[in-house]
Length: 417
Ligand code: C6P
Image 1 (cartoon, rainbow, N blue to C red):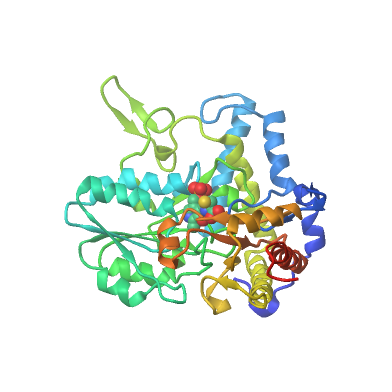
Image 2: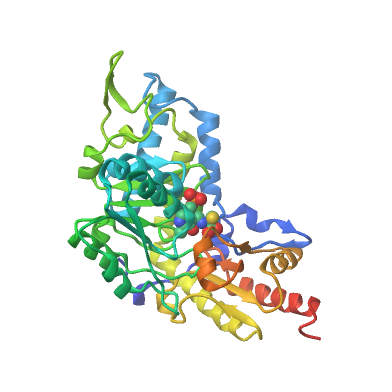
């Protein structure tokens, strides 16, 4: 990992030129895109990779013995290797899914239903996205297990004392987000994983928001599974990743059954292909996978440490500016070192959806709503909030535009003259 002192700032002007959509005019204004936590924008390198595949070597993979199919197979497999190097895993531990959600479902169906028994428990937290909550509700209900939730502190952090009080020998799964899509909290997944393993539980990391933003080593975290989505890390939609430790993947039953995931098929029984293909049934999203590999290369080329530093600087500035606006309530940790580039907030007297609509008039895109974290909204005592999220192509000027837009909304609602 690079040393902080050695970090060079991003060459933001030339980097922004890689993202054609940032030239888009929206409602008469150059777009200010502050919704990368929902989905990131795509660099031209990724867009061109998709076009190149369809124009030059579109063919199915693992099936043809002709040139096009061989090229497509090679590019799709290389993409697994690129993603593996992004998170310090090996090629066969990288399963391409549709998104993070499918990754959790894969583990729930193929590991959870088999290993979680009546009276066992599964631990998640109050800050989980629905995709890392609902699959575990399903497994718990199906197998007669108990779903437990780590509480969060006033400051939007996981309550580790509470975690220790609910973790026990009957805990089979602990599944926690590394970076909350609402609070912006960065959780200490290494410690949570260590404690989980001490009790014999399988540890899963929701890395949907973290892989796009930090340098990650699954070896260092020592998680058993990690799920994330391509579309939040500059890649195409419809492609995601499930990392799984080799030993566990090898002993697991498949998730989906059909073509490509088999080794030998008889009329009444079959045997399974080697990993990762055992978990990639049917014709996969070939173009998406290749595009994701290019996105991984792009992130590594820019440098995850620099991306993190850049978004943290923007977040710091935005937290300062937002806190100067009367009536703004900011959720999540006060300490900048505990959070990443996501800020959820409300403006007194203005519904988050109204605020988002007014900002849209100025070409500013933020997200408003429950952010697929309804239990967290209930805990915060709100139905919805606004959320600005930052990525490598954002600038301090984007934050200034957001602040101007919020002040304009306050004027429209009569809070300032
Ligand atoms: N959060 C957001 O605007 P999918 O939809 O499968 O690509 O990702 C699911 C997911 C899982 N975990 C976390 C922490 C997430 O933030 C998300 C997606 C988006 O916050 C869309 S709801």
